[in-house]
Amino acid sequence: MKPEAHRMLTPPLPLDQGTPSSVLTPPPPELSGQIDLCWATSGCTGAGTSFHELLPDAGGHLIFRHSPRGCRLVLLGPTTERATVEREAGAEYLGIHFRPGQVPRLADVRSSELTNGFVELTRLGGMPIDSVAERLRALPDLASRQRALAELLRGEAPPLVTDARCRRATRLLEAHGGRLRVDELAAELGLHVRSLERLFLEHHGMTPKRMSRLVRLWNVFGALYSGTYGNLAELAQECGYSDQPHLIRDFKALTDRLPGEKDAFQNRRLERAETRVVHRHRP
Image (cartoon, rainbow, N blue to C red; front, side, top):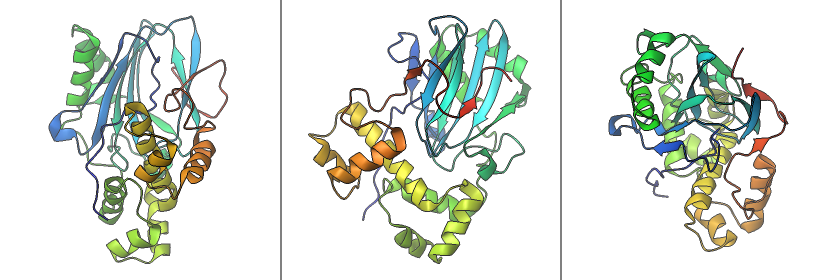
């Protein structure tokens, strides 16, 4: 099976869907192997705290929040199930979405420990967070601030996943859209299946089968967003599912929704935290 080119995705991000003041852009070309895309949003309506669903994701996020209450920078790891992100009304959020296995070493934490969790950062690009905030505030709009945040990652840190075999396996899964069987992936690396599974659990905090499911899911999100399919049977074939019922079962199990629903690829604003909270706007 020939690998695919990277697909530009519009993932389910903790944005206010439909808000005019939201920006999604590709990363700087030299960072495209690490970063999937950059996002920014401001002007969250309402008062106080709101909650936004975060769908399962094999990648990770760097999230910078700025508001009159202050600023905060967190590194959010992969999520293997639905989770909740807490949002502050009136705050501006800038984000970097990383490719699977490419979350950078910005904190003293094991990569597997970051799965389904986050760590707060106090520095970026050699600067304290308050200095980063001051630099970003001087820029004229969301798009320029978002680009500046991405630029601070240039040469900043290698991936948290240190094992070269694990990084190669992750790249292969992404390149094939999650359609490599675990035994095929193990054979590509010259490993036994059990050895590959131990490697993934140590470095990713999940099995290669779970990683494969999440990569395929995000290819479904991309196709749903772009509309590049005729029907669900065609979507299933394009994204590597055995048939349409397999796609529907897997999509439902991971997202608690159906791929035929309107905006099935988007996060939704919640009335309360319905799942585990992986990021809060304040400690």
